[in-house]
Length: 355
Image (cartoon, rainbow, N blue to C red; front, top):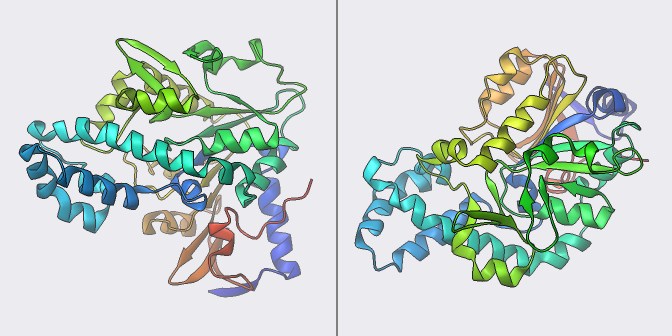
């Protein structure tokens, strides 16, 4: 393994190559954003959510609910919330129904407290989006992002940067969903003169309400707090895949993003703050995927590291044993000259984004 100083000419040359292959107009990335972004801004991740759920369920008067949680709490503590709830029995699925409103309210309240901080804080992800908005095609200024996150951090950052957000919902106070709007935004929005983020949320969002057969989007915190039990999100659990398939909006989000991953098109794949703990993301994709892939994440599973060591099209920046590493063209480097965790907790590796 080679040691690499990030202030060296050698590293600068590698960075320029990464930018050309993964972040250029000819290879504009399709972006997948995980909870790593939420953690940067202080919004609770899965570990904090699991702790909060444990406290809430312990206070419940439903003894059966407590028993279900008890049956799986050891696995949750050992392997995380996703893995711990992945194998619920048929008669245990009521736990999923119970944790949905608790989760929605927890994330909503956390985000509300941090709303101004999220807007004002400058991070690597902010600089990344600003960089890409100045690099995107002059004919169709759309940057595609998919996230399983429930929060609205990406939306708030876009407001800060003056970048429009296309969610598939239209309207002012009570937005209605249109698949065609998500699929063909150029029919409605001026995508030549202004940059847009087209945001896909296949696990829902804390500002989506589904009540009495009607679904709508609202950004009014008072309404959201009042309707917290109706917030439409997909929470961890064995029924997660089924919900994602049967809910029309969730399914549309996933299908439309997948359609963008057309092997005939020019693009790269940027995976940001994503730990690959979600069964909905099939990592077998990398086995035959020929596009360039850039992964920026503090924690990366060993099988992803191994794939990057085998396939030269996968570049990874990650953190391990209190050190920072890069895998570039199937070679592993130990990065020197970084502040511990700086480029990962700050959102991007030490790549200089200049307009």
